[in-house]
Structure formats: C-alpha cells, structure tokens
Image (tube, rainbow, N blue to C red):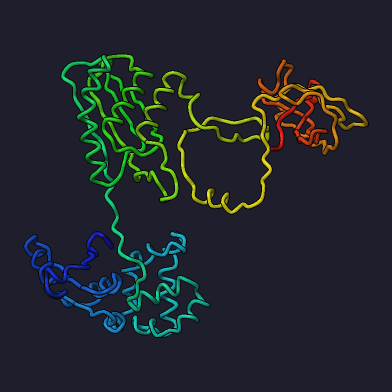
Length: 429
C-alpha cells in the first residue's frame, strides 16, 4: 500500500490468464465497481510510473508500455512529487527518516527556482551533475521523475500471532493429563507454523490457575523446531522442573517464529546434531543439574585468564573456519591450559626462574630459556582478606613467564603475587 487510498499490485505472469494488460486493468475496474469503489487504474513496468500516472492523469485506465514510462509522465506537473514523496523516500534507506521528510519540499522548491515545471524537465537534468550537488537524494528524485525503479516489489508480511488455547473442563494437576491436552494444541500450532514456512524459536506457555493468577513459563529452544511431539516433550519437562503452584483451568501456548534451521551447510561437511535429540538431552540435563549449569562456555567481560560464563548451547558450523584451517600448510603452535593449574616449586636466580619442579609428568627440570615476567592484575576493587581471593571475588595479581625446560618442552608458569605461590598454567604443544 502507498497510502490509505492507493494500492500497488504485482501482476507479473498474468498475461496468460487475461490476454493483455488492458484487459486485466478493465477486470480490476469492474471488480471495484461491483464493490462500490470508483477508482483509476494504471499499469506500468515500474511502481513509481504507475503511481504517478494514477495521481496525475484523469483517464480511468492507463497502460504504459515498457520503455515509455518517462515519456508518458513527462508532462505531469512538478508538484505531483509531493504526493508520492513517502512512497519514494521509504525505499531510500541511505537517507535518515527525519532528514527525508524535511527535504521533500526543499528539493521541489529548488527545482522550481531553476525554472523547472514538469517531470520531464527534471528528467532532462544531467545525472552526474545532480549527484555532485545533491548526492543520492537528487538522483532519487530524478529517477522518480523518469519513472525508474531498481528495487522489486516486496510485500509486507502480515504480523501473524501463532497462538493456541485450551479451556479445560476440570482443573488439571497431573502432568500426564496436561500432556494429553498439550499434544493436539501443539499439533495445531505446528500446522500454523508450517504453513507460514517458519518454526518455533521460543515457546511461551501461560497457565490460568484455580487461584485466579497467571503462571508463565518461557522455553528458549536451542534451535527453531517444528515438531509437535518434540515441543510437547520439552514443555512437559520444563513444567516438571518448575511446576505450577496450583491446578490449571486454562492453557495458552504462544510461539515466536524464526526461519527453519539448515542441518547441513555443504555436501562436504557433517550435519549438525539432530535438533530433536539435542533439545531433549538439554531439557533433561537442566532438570538434573539446573538450568544455570547447562550450556556452552562463553568469554566473560574480564581479563582474568580462567574466567568464563555459561550461555545457551547452540552449535553452528562455519565453513569459513574450516576453509581457513585447511589453508594452513605449516605446523601450528597451540597453547594448552590446564583446567586446574599445577602447583609448582620454582627456584629463582637474579629474578628469573632457573629450576621448575611440578607434577603432571613435568618432574624436576632446569630452565634453558625464559621470557617474562608479564604482570597482570584485575578486580582489585573487590580485594578482600579471604583465603582464596581468585575464587571468591575474582581478584588476581600474577607474574607470568614462558619457560623452555631442558627436555625441550615449553610451559607457561606464573607466580601468585598475593600468596607468593608458583603454578604451571599450561604448555605449548
């Protein structure tokens, strides 16, 4: 829709049904008259040419042949651009919205001061010079005056609400009874999602309890799912881990849609894990371990070398990563860190480590070469007198060294400046 009184239709491919554009336009007019609507119809190869013809010409039916757009609308007055301003400006994202609306009348007034009176006068201007003076905005208005349009007609999809509800005859407290009622609800919901070509990314279940309050649970799915049995299993597992405090009178399930997931990105790559099996596994693990303990590690907003958070587990496959790894021809040095640093005894001479003794297969080794120290600290504002400050508050202060031992192995060691103890953080593989 251009505005409340103007509609643009894509009639590509209808020639075989109607024979000619004029016949189709006449059929549209007849159908409008039957509905009590008096309208003007214009058919053109571009949207802007059709809209300008409808606004500027008095003919009930106008058919513009391809390539004749600029000639047909050339005699229309310049002021007609104000009527199609919103239609033109909506499709130029390079210009901010507030700037667009403010510059509409300014551009038309400039054209009038130049002595231009019709769309044909604007179309005759040199485009390069217009761009040099006004940028993309000037070129956009000239394209409108020529009836040119480079973007296809993209319909605006309707904001659909994917929701189902079930009014129970008697209050339900058992999960088995609730599951039997959820199955047909979710089958209907999945049918709506399939018809729209999407899947459920988030499920929101609202339960109207006998205590006259709403109990709401939101289920974040690891990937978009369009399987009613799987959705029912996940919902029941989620409700079992967080049971409602009273009986249920009404069930409302709402799905937030998302595009369906691609399970195999390339013929030469492995498919990602099954969505159904993965979702069920994660749901059962959350019941056993707690939702805050299940997920994937993500980096924390800190420079602490061992800090991490737990985020949602959503595996992806990136072809760019595999291709980048395949292009590496020489050996790659990998730094491997111990999950729990090894306690070490280090002998220091002139401020540098000369002897390292630790468990984990290191033994007692002399240091051939070393680099460091690199001093780092953080979260000092949280420093307390606790026994283990790094675990309790996140505060740390250390000096790190890279050492090469007499057997050729390279390790990363550090000294905890708070307690004066040495640790082996990892090794170079």
